[in-house]
Image (tube, rainbow, N blue to C red):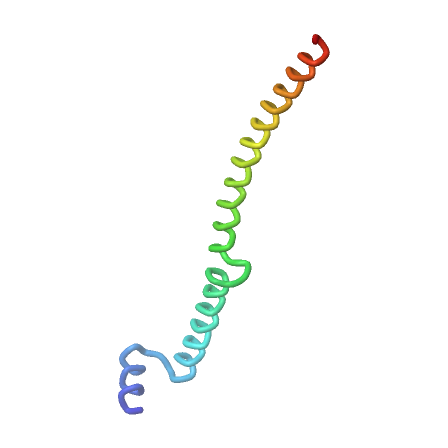
Length: 83
């Protein structure tokens, strides 16, 4: 306790001010922890953005595949009608 009092004298803070400051910092770090690692965090946001990009690429591939299959279908349909 003597060490703490000496340290507070050197820094120029009262015990009450130091405790309030520490409590405020603890709350701030807890809040930042939730922002970074919680259910609605930045990490989750980044993961969802990556997933969105992958889904957009898959959508384009499926559209291209669908277009080719439709073309093949109509060509086969035309062959049947011609014969």
